[in-house]
Image: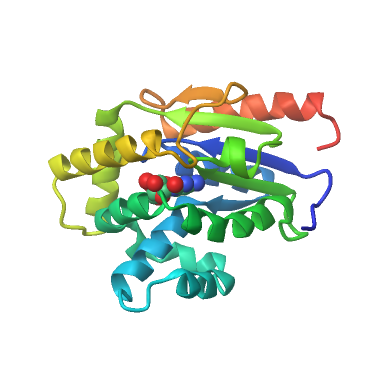
Length: 222
Ligand code: C5P
């Protein structure tokens, strides 16, 4: 695999709806980084399973991943609660994770030349996908705050879902993501813990920016 040298790599892990995606996008814009919300790949596979149940096998997923473009991942259909729950089930499979591994590696280590680096967020980014990232964050928030944020997002998208259903599905996903055998969500020792419960989007961005700028000064060449 080609690895670009002297690029800034940011790795973020977090449970669902903790604010990781929002801050990752803002940081990527600020530092000109290629951004990937890795959860969207699992959501994309979940979508394939629900849409093409008869064709859904290893070969089919492999083919779809091969032709997968970043813009395919921005389809709003992937944001539904149903697809999120299905993604959480699918992501427990070793075979599925194997299929998306290289896509993520290529994204992280070989971003297009016009970008100064990459920023990935997910569940196993800090220790499996980009273990040598320049800066690692573990972003979290309390359950009530996360559920409320996700509920508001889904309402905006006109999803017919109640707050209680969102709480239930986040709890279920947490249980599965933290406890699964393969690539569980965890905070690594070298990740900085950021609790966004009482932070505005702007405050969160500034907090992380301060940490990254400090690292950039220490590592000079980034
Ligand atoms: O981040 P998001 O909530 O969209 O992710 C959907 C699901 O995909 C998660 O609940 C998790 O099970 C799975 N996922 C994963 N590894 C990642 C990113 C997401 O297992 N790196």
